Length: 120
Image 1 (cartoon, rainbow, N blue to C red):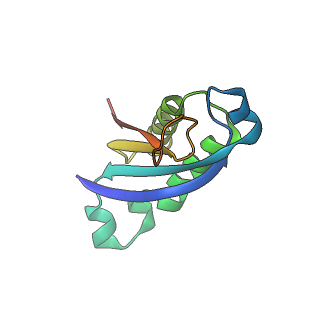
Image 2 (spheres, rainbow, N blue to C red; image 1 turned 90 degrees about the vertical axis):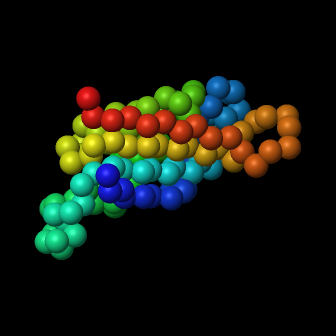
């Protein structure tokens, strides 16, 4: 299966379990791996034969910045569900949410959640 990849779309949002995460907010990175057949788009050079990566990134950005989630798992699930509904050409989607500023009392670069959902 062919793929469209969106790497580390930066968003500022207020997701998290702790009250200060809602007040202060923090940066998140969204990465998407869309799986679909790109043969027709490659042969025809027609955007109508693919999924616009700008539209896909825009949908993920809107969800991440206009809604609040306690868990990044819920954010990832919502992006996957809504993208599959919005773009019928998608066979599947992997969503990765990186939270580099996770409030963990340890030295680490960040935490991430990655889910894969396919059309049923």
